[in-house]
Length: 118
Image (cartoon, rainbow, N blue to C red; front, side, top):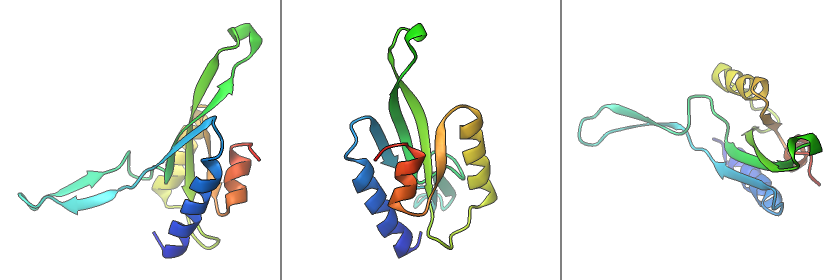
């Protein structure tokens, strides 16, 4: 991740952290060698999974008893020139198809719009 993406991600996390109906967590993915065996060990949720993972609490419809519901949320943070990998694209499509909230944020405003918050 570039320094620009790191700063953008921090600004998005700060802006979204002001909303009590959101819980997003940094999802670092990659691989490192195991110091004991030298084998590569992958970490993070899944290859291609987004930078910010969590949920947004929403009120479900009255016919569903009006309970709160946590909707899986996945935001990929990219600079203006950053490109999605095929794994990231596939991840976002899978989350969207399953009914989650997802998108690519290139600005704080993008993240707010994806989550439909001010």
